[in-house]
Amino acid sequence: MKNHVTIIRLMLLAICTSMLTACEKSEKELYETCAAGLVYIEHNIYYVIRTGNEFFQYSPITDEFYDYRNEEKEVRTYGTGAIISEDGTILTSQSVVTASPIDRYAIRTKLLTELNNARALLIARINYGVASYTDITVLQLTNNRIYTIETGNWDIIPHSEYWVKYVYPDTHNQIIAKATPMESSEDLPYALLDLEDSIPNPYIFPLASQTDKDESFFSKIEKLIKKRNELYIIGFEGTNELNALQLMPTISAKFENKSVDPSFIPLPSGEAKGRNGNLIINEEGEIMGLIKETTDGAQGINLETTEINRPKKENKN
Image (cartoon, rainbow, N blue to C red; front, top):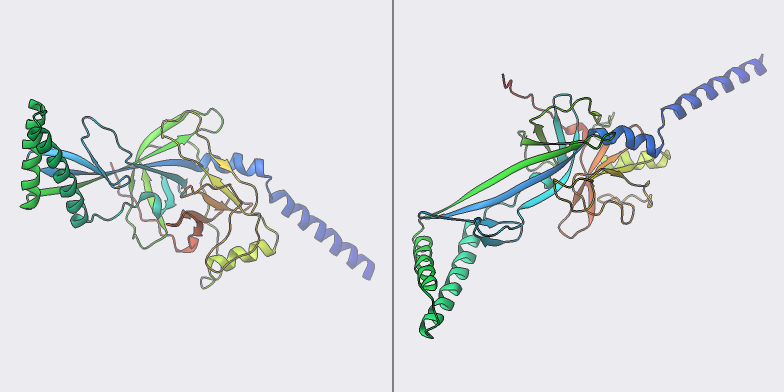
């Protein structure tokens, strides 16, 4: 009888093992499944400076002023987003969509410094007798701008646009669509975007379930590692333009360093390359966390997946 019980137990164990093995995907299978749910995000952010009837722009990324009619400055940041619902809700890192707050005093100080330096050079050219008619016209414009800013009659108008690119993994065909941020708090580590165009049959990323709400995200990852479950990084890497033709997501190797720090989890060396919004996923394709590039250039992981609230979209019809 004992032998029969032992045999039955071994059979059940073999069945369970085979079922668990069948659920696990190889890196290639995981990539082919999850790549269909990723989007590449471009955030265009710039400020329009209005001085009277004159307009020019300021890039918070390069901290430079420029005439948008004659110059092009870097006003874009990039990141990865994951489609997490059928209606096109995109999850990404808050750092992908957040612009630095406007510091009116700092911008005013920098602008006046640059205008006064330009005026000094123009006056020097006039005094040396080498100024052209254009120099005199520019000097008048510069004087007007200085006066307008010093008297407070100027405005800063922020502009923020979000575009996403979806690449069909099989055909490499691409769609570029506008996205709008959904209501969220800047205190959260994640942000939600609303995709304006529909994508047929995307992979919908599930959020990793967390039975104990009091358990920290890092504790959950530590448990996964101890169980020898694997974690992967998937997303878009490097700095690329939105209209790049060969921009496809990549999946990294497994975590090389299994040690877990209470506030930081090391990533595979050279894998994530600081791409904000890249996903940490488990073998089932569930989102475990998001990569955020910190101010010192290090890579950290954030996101309490159980805390994500998806607000209902308004009916556009």
